[in-house]
Every structure is written in structure tokens, then in C-alpha cells.
Amino acid sequence: MDDLKVVGLQLQRELMAEFDVIKRCSIGYPIAILNKPLPRGIGGPVFSTPWWLTCPQLQKDIHLLEAEHAMKSLLSVELKNIYREYRIKAARKRAELIPRELLEEIYWKKPELYREMVGRGVAGESGSGLKCLHAHYAFFLLYPDYPLGQEIAQLLPGVPEERCGRYCEKTFSCS
Image (tube, rainbow, N blue to C red):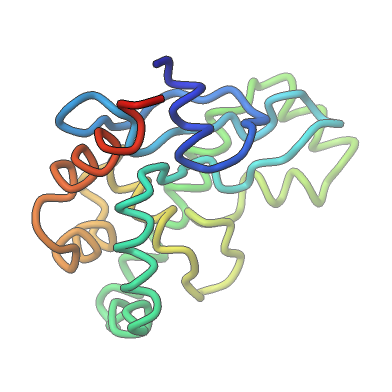
């Protein structure tokens, strides 16, 4: 089964953007993807969060962390300072995914969109708050030095890639 079909099934919707697989599980299924922030140019859909977790099992595990209010406990004073640095890094990484000429076009024609693309954090955050651990974990899979992602990984049960592979193997092997 090709990645487009698998990721569509994992996310339970048709995909609107081109993507690259960031990480695969132990048996080869996508765990996380990187979307192009502006796949159809200035007038198309906008993905201010290009880092997406696609694995249904990991989504469920991280959803449970969010339900347990893990987001508040994750942001110690030390991590808040580190997160500010990575928010800037994430904004730069997002901007690097946009062709230079397109970035210049949105700078002149859609300044609010430009600010969104070059100034927001991992999950599109504009302030010091934190949201969507799914996106932060996907960002971590691409940038393993990300301290917040490391904290999330430590809170996940077992070996995430093995849990993901077993889930997808059962779900998609019959498709």
C-alpha cells in the first residue's frame, strides 16, 4: 500500500497537501509526515503546522497525555525558556519549506499570512502557550534534539514505534 493511501487511512481523510514521511515504524508504515505549508501557493490551503503525527496508536497515546493535563506539567520554567528558542527554530524551519519567491509574494500581498508562516511555533502557536502535543512529537521525530519532544517521548508507554507497527499491521494488512 502506498504512503498516500496509508496516511489517508491513518488520518481518516483525503489529503490536501504533498508530504514527506518523517519517520516510519518498525514494519515500514508512516508515523509522522512533513506537509508543505503552502502546497498550492498564495491562494490555496495553509498548513501553519507542517509536522503531523499520523500513527493512530501514537495519536491515541498522546491524546491520553493531553487529557491527563500533561501539557501544563511539561512546561517547567526551564522548558518554557527552551521552548521559546525552539519556537523560533520551528518558524525558521517552516519558512525554509516555502520557496523564496512565494515567501516574498506573501510578504507583499498577504502580510498576515507571512507573519503566520515566519513567526509561529511548532503547532502554530503565536504566544508563549503550548498546544497540540501531536505536532510537537512529530517535530521531535524530525529534530530529536527538541527537549519538549524528548519529554513527551519519555511519557509514552513502551517503545512507540513497536506499538505503532502492531496497530497498523492489524489495521491495514487486510486493506
